[in-house]
Length: 168
Image 1 (cartoon, helix red, strand yellow):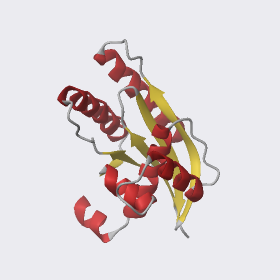
Image 2: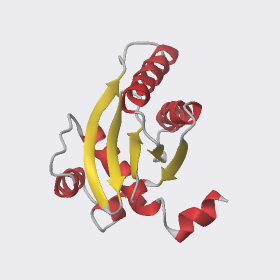
Image 3: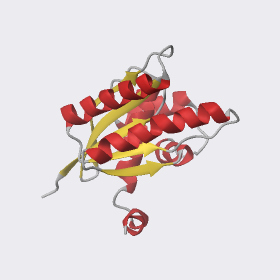
C-alpha cells in the first residue's frame, strides 16, 4: 500500500511569501491549496517578519504537511535587499522546522529545471507547467505558483539517491 505524503512548498519574499501544498501518492501529484502571506511595506522590518511567521504558522497548522521545501535566496546586486530577503527566508525555514518537519532547500534553477525542463525559465512558463502538472490548482500570484513548483520539485527529488545521501 502506498502512503500519501503532504508537502508544503514556500517561496520566501518580504512583501509576499508564496505557499503551496501538494500531496504525493506513489507517482501521482494532487493539488491541496496555495496562497500568499503578505506584509505591509510601510511597517518596520520586525513587524513584517512577524506577519510572515504568523501567516506560515497558520498554513502549517491548517494543512498539516509532512515535509516542507523552501527556495534558496537569489543573490542580487542590492546587498540590503538580499539581506532582507534572507531574513524572510529564515522565517520560511524556521516555521516548518519548529513544527517538526524536515525541510528541503532548492536553488531557483533546480526548481525551474524540475518543472519546465530548463533552469532559465520565465514566470509564465512555470505557471503554465504547474497547471499542466496540477490541473485543479488555483493560485493568486506568481509567488503561490512558484511555491507549488517548489513543492513539486521536492516531490520529485525527495526519494532520489542523492537526496537520501544528502540527508545522512
